[in-house]
Amino acid sequence: MGKFDAVGGFSAEVMGMAEEALASCHCQQEGYESIRRVNMRRVLMAFRKAGLSDYQFGGTTGYGYNDSGREAIEEAFAMIAGAESSLVRHQIVSGTHAIALALFGVLRPGGRLLAAFGRPYDTLDGIIHGKDGYGSLGEFGVSYSEVAPDAAGGPDLAGIAEASRSSDAVLIQRSRGYSTRKPLSIDEIGSICRTVKEANPDAVTIVDNCYGEFTDILEPCSAGADLIAGSLIKNPGGGVAPAGGYVAGRAELVERAASRLTAPGLGSYCGPTLGMNRLIAQGLYFAPMITCEAMCSSAFASCFLHQLGHKVDPGPLEDRGDSVVRIEFNDKEELLSFMKAVQSGSPVDAKAVPVPGYMPGYEDDVVMAAGAFIQGSSIELSADAPMRPPYTAYMQGGLSRHQMEMTLMEYAEGALSRRKRL
Ligand SMILES: *Cc1c(COP(=O)(O)O)cnc(C)c1O
Image 1: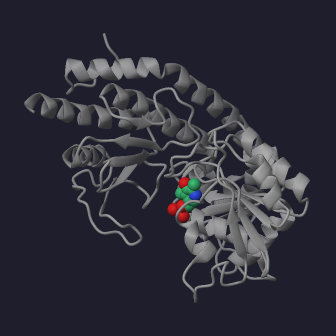
Image 2: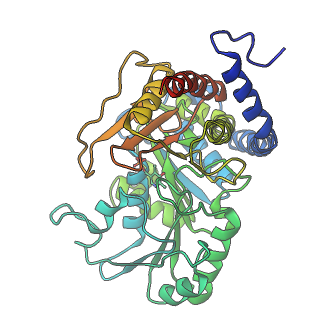
Image 3: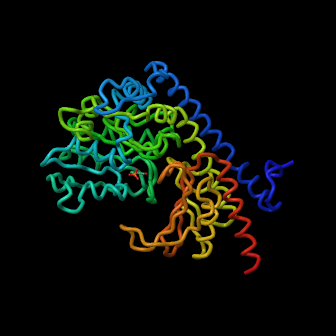
């Protein structure tokens, strides 16, 4: 009997394809499970050493002084990240906000920021050279340059060394986000950090760690990064943290970022947790498992959609540094039917129908599918696509690999019957 027979509702053809996709990504999924095991151990050891206790889950109000739960979580998070100290707060509204805290904490007027591996994630544009009047780095007199990937698509170490000499901070983006570049491995991040320090020991290395957390057995601080920053509604929130972000790394630099979050002189010592401690701690506990689910979902998606004839990136069995899969469709109708399948396969808002619409910051109309428990959470299965040829969707996340299987199988039923009609 096949794995999908008891599920019901699928044709023999689609069940056969799903079986085949599962068989072909089996080793890759096992690899992600091994990573999950190592990370689970690290999380548990950190909670034990930090002495996390249930009386700490109540949290504080007002100024939030002496919040021993927040302190235990931050101590544990630092150990997990291989860092001296960390700031883990629900008051950080997003990954972009966390990265801004790191950049504004480190850089000063007249300073220079270098992006080490091509153009940073879209939302960083506002931080670096946003509209005047809103206090971007540019407005504060911080200049900016970037080094493109080398011809082979890897980091251009010679170019990074040269540009680091005149830079005060070097931004390194780990995951590929929505670009076509490769994700950076922990080893590659390590060699960029060594290159920067050899060229300029005073330059601070800052890793945009969004989407990279728990995808490998180490985090960038263990490879020499001075600071890392990311979002709690991605991997490290485990699908449970209702909001938040983090900065971790060298203690003095984390305190400088904290002084941006609160105010100079207040730093990390205040910040009421308002009952969030349990959700943030429990999210961190689930994070190795949930990240593994998202990576396994992504591995399955590449194999299954490739079989269905779609061009996918990463391709079947290719390495990945995050759970994003780029999928090409033949036409608009096919793309929209895919988005509908993602939406109707979701646990929340399954009855909503995704329609393309205007989004500020995008040239073309954009269509999005997300039925998430937490607004905008991209560790939950979601997809979005600009409405222009080549019709391409970016899909990411997955709290359960089985939701991904069912979603793609339903899409395949529709796609196959449509192809037979044509
Ligand atoms: C998600 C992400 C960010 C930050 O995005 P937010 O929506 O602000 O959390 C930054 N960089 C990368 C690579 C990301 O994937």
